[in-house]
Image (cartoon, rainbow, N blue to C red; front, side, top):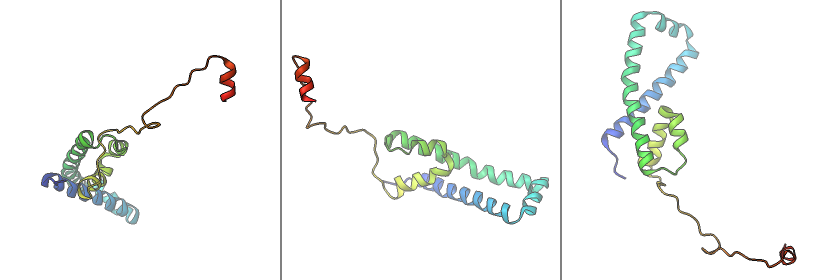
Length: 134
């Protein structure tokens, strides 16, 4: 599958967003006073919001791209629940599996044959024959 350069850029930005989120959580547990100064000082709070907004807009666009790709090409794979509910966090993993690794896509359901494509219905003339077969 050919990888689109714009979608690959969205993948990289999404990874940066997740790493920034993870780094913030680690800093929160290691140095709680630092996070308090970030959120209490208005100038630092504004800078944090600007960085978060710059990273989140392409991340959400990348998630929408993955939803459209899932609906068109991979509808019956079972990843729809994860992609829809864990949107920004699962999106790079889904992209990696389908685009970079090249997992086979499941866009249609193929019914499996039942008894060599034939179904035999037996008819009984009375209840005694039916009970004998059981």
